[in-house]
Image (tube, rainbow, N blue to C red; front, side, top):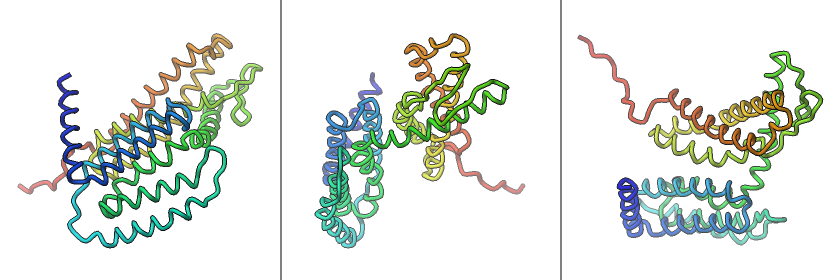
Length: 295
């Protein structure tokens, strides 16, 4: 409890400092979070996927704010770039749009946000805020579309790996695209079985692990990129266990109890595997090795 209160007091103190030193950046950050939250509640698809992404945006934004520094040189070039971006906003509003995918509005918002951060904090501030702005103003509003696009490749790869594994042991298991045939029955690997519903949670947990373990951007990026093969491998293991259950108990293997339990297993297993992979990279507090002293 005391730790939570200490964190809240530190955050409140930081917000006060940022409001005095970087009011434009702080207002942009809070506005982007508010817009993303509004999208999650009213129009961006399933909240269970949007909320982890929103929390990831909070963490990205807090780190971006804590790393901002006052500009020591001229902001002239950055402000010229900002005005050029604002000049593109009317053109962005003329882009074609269809259905819920509002390309014109999203592009205009993104250009405006880029212009604001460039104008107030220069190119360095722009680079720091780029991930959080892309996440809150683009990815979260269209997250349902993106997850649908990612779902099929994840299902297909996991299906192929699962079937190939069973065939190695001589089992008569075959597949056609994302449908597995076992004991004369066809098992369709749907979006719910692709692991896509848990990917956003894993993105949040993976970011927390990366920030905790690494201080160098290069190692952090490499570690975070390993989340993709981790998700594929963990989901393949889940499908493998599902098929084993089907061999053992038949169609009861697809009851909600087993399906939900394997979903929890998938998240825990993928998180643990991702954490263990971090051991391959230097830790945050590892000293740089020095040359041995000659005696």
